[in-house]
Image: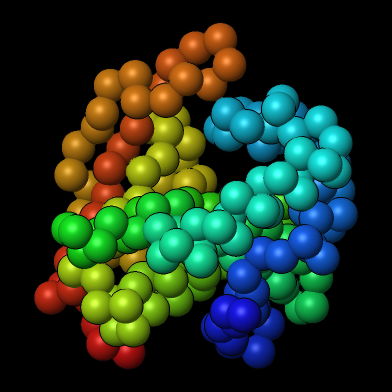
Length: 181
């Protein structure tokens, strides 16, 4: 079981079936907010959908292809973050994240992405950490920008969000650029 204490307020824990009801409730209460930038929201209709998602993330972890964690803030599950893909051939970790609407603006996700980046580089010996976000998703883009990731450019129509496509901004940091803290 993977757990990672970030600070006295935030802990990451590998998703497991016991998290399904809390994740589904968080998704369900923030549907319109999350739907703006996440293509899976409409497909998550029941707790069973969330259970299937968690099962797939556990398989990804077991196969060393991904690491998806629940974010606990002051003991409460508030979002999900991790490495959507671990590319061991090229030593790249791709970070993805989402946070419940009422937990925005507390610096939670910035601390989470900083910790995930440090873990990827120092513990997994990853060379490159990448974050992608829709170009108009300013809150999500602010996180890698605050942390000193390099904006490499944009990818046109990189993701389909229901009835339209969005461009993605691509950010990265290399191991040699990251503080070893």
